[in-house]
Length: 377
Ligand SMILES: NC(=O)c1ccc[n+]([C@@H]2O[C@H](COP(=O)([O-])OP(=O)(O)OC[C@H]3O[C@@H](n4cnc5c(N)ncnc54)[C@H](O)[C@@H]3O)[C@@H](O)[C@H]2O)c1
Image 1 (cartoon, rainbow, N blue to C red):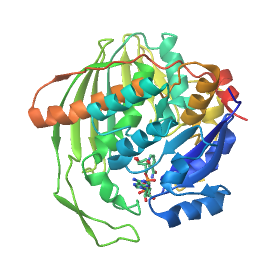
Image 2: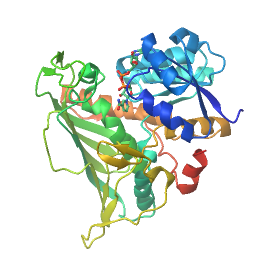
Image 3: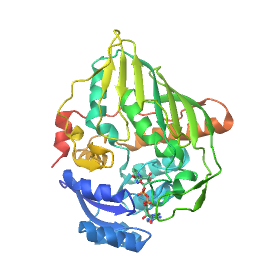
Image 4: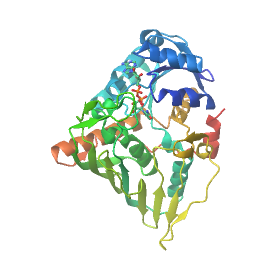
């Protein structure tokens, strides 16, 4: 197989700039064309990043493309990914992969029948900090993980995103929008989930946008914006996950994991970097010794300060996995299990009962310093 894959992008909105600007850091990727239902959005990105702007149909038929990245909104992920597979190309999707397990299983069957791969974000668990946490757990630093807590809570999305309506419709909400970062990292650190239970609610049936250009517009809320879930892992670990857009401020950490020998404090799974801390039985909490992981190195300024951002690492890992014939870390099997976990959390909230997972997955291979370096140009 070729040493790099021709990449096309469908969906040229907010996150597309991250893919266009960071993909050149990685081996195996060559972005050649982009498309959007809104032609001018594709033309804008094409001009900014020196690729071809095409219609969606032209892009699907483009012989120079091996993999198409689906950066459309969650409600169209399934239909767009299905059309990519029908066109005979590999898919890499932004999260969430799809909005129901049935849709995911249909993609899985199609991909299998056609011998194509489907990969899915998030890839932030490949970050230097999360891989350091993974190494510490694998080496027995905190013993066997028995429990933990995860909290991702804020006032919402209508204050910053230019077009936030989709976040509050079915397929949005904090569990499907931000849950993927937490579930993917928990799968990375602990493995697959066995069953879930949850209470869900929403503070308000409508929200008012305060970001530009739609400031003042009222949008409907059609999915829970406040979720308190319990996850039992196959390993036996039990984790509390609260995800909310109805909280103005709080004092909970993003992720704390408690083991038989100590505790591990994992930074925000939405990002690649951050400080990992741990304590032993003596309760003395200290940062883990930093390691020189390529995906922990600061490479960007952001409104919150300098940060490490290597989004597209999951796409690059999938490209190299296809070239080398190995399991991609951001695989369909893991994304589908994540969808099972998240949609079962919402279902549990509706039905008031615990729900057993019908899917499972393996932990992704750890991505140490050498493996991460090998993905970079
Ligand atoms: N914005 C972020 O910071 C961010 C971060 C991580 C992940 N994501 C994920 O990335 C995806 C896109 O988010 P975004 O913020 O870029 O949204 P966005 O609304 O800014 O952009 C989506 C683009 O997709 C296009 N589109 C919609 N339906 C289409 C279709 N059927 N065919 C072709 N084009 C279509 C829209 O015209 C728009 O340009 C979402 O799944 C989101 O969860 C976003």
